[in-house]
Structures are given as C-alpha cells and as structure tokens.
Image: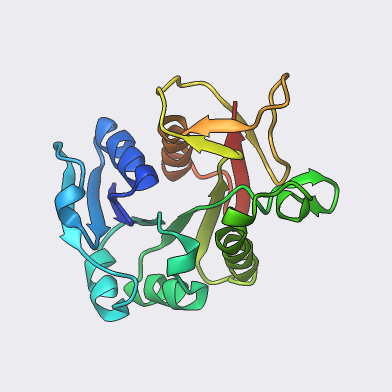
Length: 203
C-alpha cells in the first residue's frame, strides 16, 4: 500500500516508517524537516506542515492510508480531518495518547491526582482530538493509544491490545516501545479491526 505519514520524522513516525518499509509498503514521510526521514528503501521524504493545509492535501492525495503522528498541541482536529477529507484518502490512523485511557470505569488517566503537570496541555488536546473524531462518520478513522510510558526500545514483537482501558503488566507498569507500537499500527493498516474506534497497545 501507499501510506503517507504526517509527522514522519518524529519518534513514532520513524518507527512506523520502518515497520511499513519492512513489510514492503511505500511510505511518504511528511515533515517540516524531511532531511530527518528514515533513509531506507520504500521511504520517500516530502516537506509538509499542518499549518499549510492546501499543500498537505496535495502531499497525501493518492495514498491508500494517511497516518497522523504529530503533537496534538500543533494541530487542530477539524483542520486536520478536513485535510484528510479533501484529499480523498479513504483511511486515517492517528497516533494517540494514553491520557484519555481509563484507569477505572469513567476515570481517565488524565484526571488522576498524580498525572504530571508538564504533560497536561498536550494530553488535554489529545483527549479533545479523540472526542472530535468520535463525531466524524464520513471518514474511516482509527485512534491508537500507546501505554503510559512510550519509549525508544527494542522491537520485541509481542504485546497486548485493549480498547479504552489503560493496560498494565503484573507489576503495575504501563509501557510500550515505539517499535512494538508500530507493529500494532501497521497490523491495523493491513487488517483493519477498529474502524471508527480507539484501541490501545501495551506489554
């Protein structure tokens, strides 16, 4: 497939680019700094910015799938969804956040007393982005939330999937590497299971 990644040179975007290329897909890595794109067969770097929607529509048009891997603080959900809609790309996957996942019924991680202040602004915008997507019914979207600790680490190839609850291991830790997150996201691209829904991945 032809997959465009908006934010293709960040940590998530790079890991997703690598996993897609590993499986033989064609990747267009769109970024304000295309020189930082993964240098491997199957990955083409293109300059692009969420602040220039017309150029972004042109960059992603003709792809089978578009992935958004940009900071929520840098985006407006209505504008970004509008770009996808105008491009005609049939599927839209979003690299989500963990803060909107529930730690108990009706209790998002974001609202817990120990949630770090440093991450609240980004996390709040991520939760709002998901809320916006849940009202979009004319695009086939999927929002994949990582676990609480999202880190650069090995590609283990094993993990668990969930829906709206924060995944924790036997020791109470909630984590996933970018590399294993990328496996889950590319699996969803190849065999869609979560149309117009959020799901999560963790160890």
